[in-house]
Length: 200
Image (cartoon, rainbow, N blue to C red; front, side, top):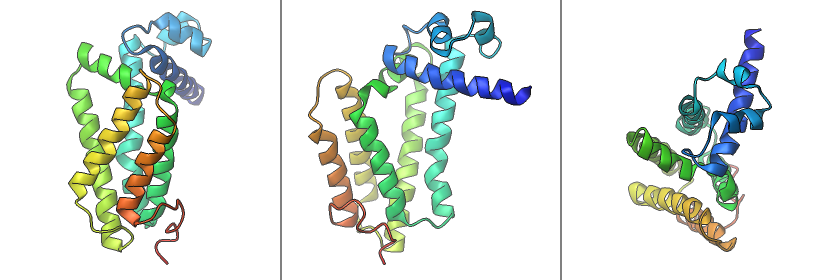
């Protein structure tokens, strides 16, 4: 029974993510999430008392992945170039689909509930990318770059594109040019899989 409850909870979070991405944070109601998840109000309230708690659960799940995935791959000895390519592919997909971004919802949540949330997420992202780039430099897969400078370029170009693309129509070439720049800075070429064997 507990396993079924956990599956239902995860399903609610999946559907809630889509609702928050579409409507932001302030406009979402429990009714919206009930409809998206196909649950009765009682069914939803048995898992979460309100939209704030649902959004925070969505954030907890996201930050758990963002905080740990690079570190896990590094511990496992995955080549830095392989980790980079996976991250760049994910970034490009996300920048291509602004309708799936929680950017606006995050800003609204920070304004209405907890302004420290964005600082915390940003700090974790900085630590995550700094660790990957330093790892790649150490293994000789990445060029010796100014780590802090490149992390700033990665994070703020990515975040800027995701935010702006939810407001205005951007050419598809824009996110691709950012990805090419990051790759060129780190591996010195623009091919997506030239170094995925770990530089061998």
